[in-house]
Picture (spheres, rainbow, N blue to C red):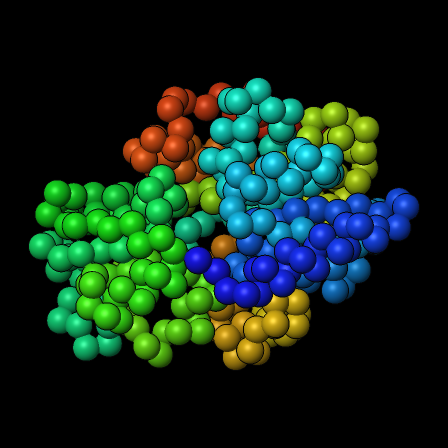
Length: 321
């Protein structure tokens, strides 16, 4: 689904982990090196915010998805990981020693559905009788395609939804005429948008939804609370820097992800406008909204009691309320 950058980043992360000096910590960020969740960490590393907050981060590990991030954090006894809300909740329900220590991305604004430049389809309502591609069953794009159609009052049974296997596969199917709309996301969208036209953005149709959260291993967080707090604080400073200095943040992203600078600048600017990155505080309503979507796809099978999985004690005081 993703480019060679993800494989390269994973191998680099493994080598960094093996060579980690004493006292240094590693963290794991879902799709680090490929998707936009990682931008605050790239900035915090570049600007020295982690070290200033009290922790030395000498390696950021990547993963191919939320479940893999959780497994990396648990297996490596890492102090922190950023993963999907669904993966964190699923791990807790499975009895894993996982706690949610911060909220990180409270928007689905990086995701959209595109169509071809010459397509007669102009709105989501025009998808009646057409084919729409999402990535895989029970994925966020599966969930958002259903919720977006429902919000637009488009009968689900009137649109043929197809699991393409990934973003690139869906866009290929779109170019070849196999589907009339396909999911995309940043920074893929900024890199390829000259070939496609945006059809609809779920964020325009749906309420705020928490995509990703910061997690830790309960026993590790208890042993290293200062380090966990320092990661959260360093990331928050990274987020603030992005909003105040998007151009410089994009340059840092381009270097960290090996992206063309114009692509990085456009992707960052697009998400800055949406306030895509959260500073760490929890929005329980946005979390509940995501859970509602996860119930639709069967990714989760019941309500979530947040007081049993959230630990606010690692947040800065001004973010705890």
